[in-house]
Image (cartoon, rainbow, N blue to C red; front, side, top):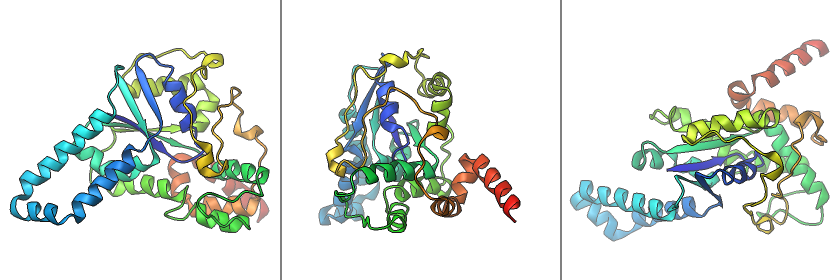
Length: 281
């Protein structure tokens, strides 16, 4: 079983469109499967008859839950291709469940410098100031948006918490997880995707960038009040050339708050920041 999860605005829609161009792979747009499985778990946990079954014959009932959940996921992900990939940010929260029922599962986690994730959101918000965020996010100041977005249950903070939590789970995920850096793809698309194909154990496919989006997998942008557009761009622009609208103060707040993330994935950012601080002292 294979899955795509990760941070918002980190190239997951781009990634699944590329993967869907591979003859051995079928990829989904944002899927309800993770939420459905979570709801199933909640029903079983709260149902009086389930509790009764667990009390009288826990091992047998737990095995039934495990087998039925596995069967449901497998049927939902049925395909005539060799690999089916289900996409949802929710899988990061269910990663321990996946490991218990699919020990050999594979998950691609898309990541991006959080400053540029916020930049992508802010740029779109500046284009649509008369429309509020669909989730009721207070949008009066940048500070309030940053606090909400990066909160533990926020749009960015929640999957961040899922990544942070990986080291606290007593399982070895080294063979299960592949971190796909958006910046690496921008730098060298073929090399970045060759690593993905190797991880998924499918043939390395040479990319024809001009034809990658002939069959675009849609995302329903109206669910987010058009704040997070998912129209694929045929031109991959290096982040250094992107119009950056986030203030230096807010950028520093993000790096400070998520220092652990930068230490793991973006050490160069911390090194540059350190040098700048030395110059200004």
